[in-house]
Length: 224
Image (cartoon, rainbow, N blue to C red; front, side, top):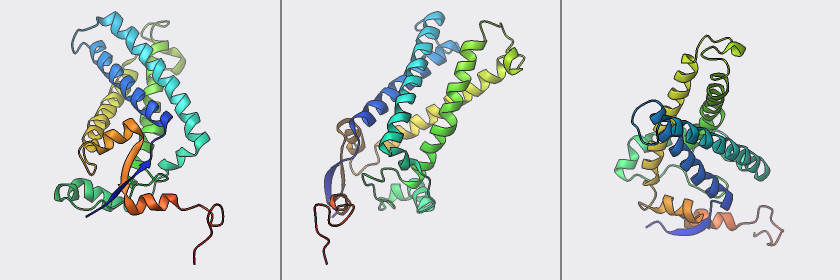
């Protein structure tokens, strides 16, 4: 039977950033669909105002998150790797339904499996920037110049709107998959609790490795 031991995996800002980003994306999606006339709740004008405010909130959060990632070295979590990539994909497609062992081990210095690294890296360097840029173009260039976006030589907003909407559906698809994967920890709620408290139950042998000094001799003599 696998034994688990608690380790402090998710730092305070990391959790703050995660939950606020989730909230802002939900607000953007909710108001975005109303702007597209999918339903009426706030009213078109109010939906636009809330959507724009949430967009600015997300941009500010992204700036702080970028600063945090680079000053703490957490950006290294997203460096892609092909090691165990195929095994991880097969685990999500088949193994998870057969209660197969997880092909990768989570540690404090390696929180993401190979597939997560690729997906999150794609979100951070491709999809979210596309959403931000297309949203800003839509926000700033439509009203002063009518339906013509002369500065970037596009005759109307159709292309921008299609790109922005397509990106929104991709982000929503990611959120739905993410919600499902939350339930795939060693218990139904273990992943959720970890992102709330910061503490996660890792396999005991992994947790013990985290306690070893990075350089023998600093605080503990090398054994053997």
